Length: 350
Image 1: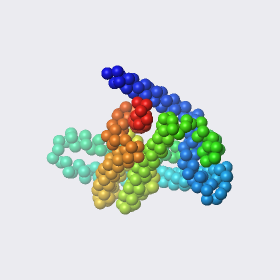
Image 2: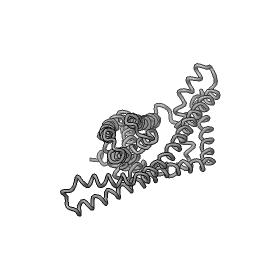
Image 3: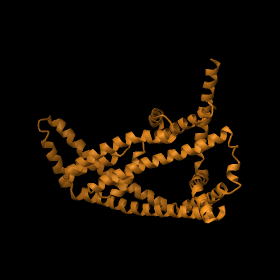
Image 4: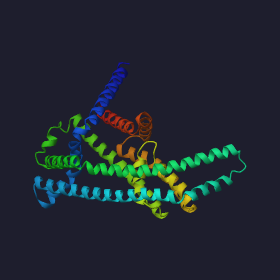
């Protein structure tokens, strides 16, 4: 009985400490962001830098400088390319949506009239209600399309206006990444020397945490990548315009609670069925939506659980409870709660 009480006390203490650290970390992230990013980047660059040191026979300072510059150059190129593509397609999508609605208002009303003929046997009040609701939905859909594209453009413009702050963050991140990478790959290993000895339990906790966090990030990047590629292929096959930006939005929406890829697939299917009259594309998009959703539901628990070394049921429980509790932040909280509990249990701290 005493052992059960002692274990229960440890679990409660762990939950309290974890919760406090979680909220402290994210509440101070605005101030620590460059250093957190630098630590993550340095961990990524550690192996490539060590490879440069061995192959080129150079010291850690020069190897760290080379790997850091190449890494940030690649990131800058990719971000610049992404912003350019997003700006172009978002602006064009907004213009096309407004132009289509203004030019095809008659076609939209005709489509509603044709739809009404299928329900002649219904009560007139029901038909009237359906027509009003459908018309209202089409109007809202058009407004949402314009608002979303406008919001994307607004965010991108805000990003451009925040360039001075972003440059400061980038500069501090770059410099700190260089110093962290240099310290990690130097013979003295100054950064890691502050950690406990490798035989210590805390050292094991640190190494396991680093491994699991890396695996967790990679697993969700893989899930997002799979969703993006699947959606891009589907949209290219059915010749959907703005395939790139819509695929990116789907990939982002896929990791957001409630929203999901249906926010893009379903309106597209409706547009292709009722207005463009491309029934093959409409049914193809619906079928693709179902298949992509099924694939997503199958691969997420397996990828996350295998990468973290946690039972799939625990991952599903963390995802569901976190989603119901507080959306995306709740999912992050619950996933890492399970991760750290698993780590501390392995080292007999819990």
